[in-house]
Length: 193
Image (tube, rainbow, N blue to C red; front, side, top):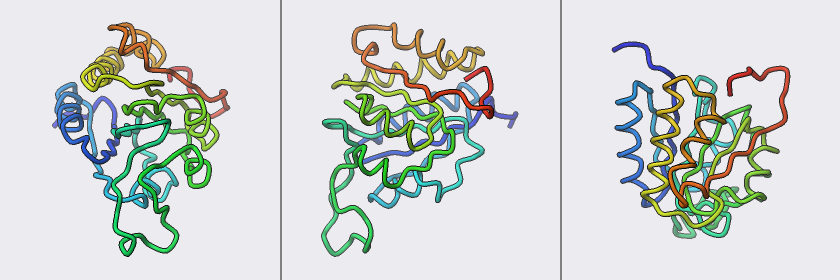
């Protein structure tokens, strides 16, 4: 196998399998290496956003989740299944991002509805994300997949994240729901984000 263009970590929430399979197959066809993690409980997501899982060699983190009212949707577990300090909720909001987040300059894309609303996006940036891209309202699932596919295709052509975003979000009214948030520059940042 030839060297991948870049590496993507794909975290997949409940009932997002179809999007994840389609996206992974497409990205790998583009020459992008994709590692997938299936999220079955809040602690799985916490491992990813807290830095417990080493993602330093990945260029992008995709959070393929359903979203509702600016919250990630998670499976509801039985009360006896949750661990002692695990959030016992079906939702994961800006509050949990603030509490657990240590995103170490990651470039993050969330595909779920309303996950690009300002409070959640600012929580991601405050937790250390280099950039955060997500739809700010309820988006059609097909449009979300088309946005992601087009965005990564543009990256493989050498476009910056901003240019790839501009092209992918211009497909139709649904893809225009995606928002682009970027952290203030630090000395560690490269020009081509």
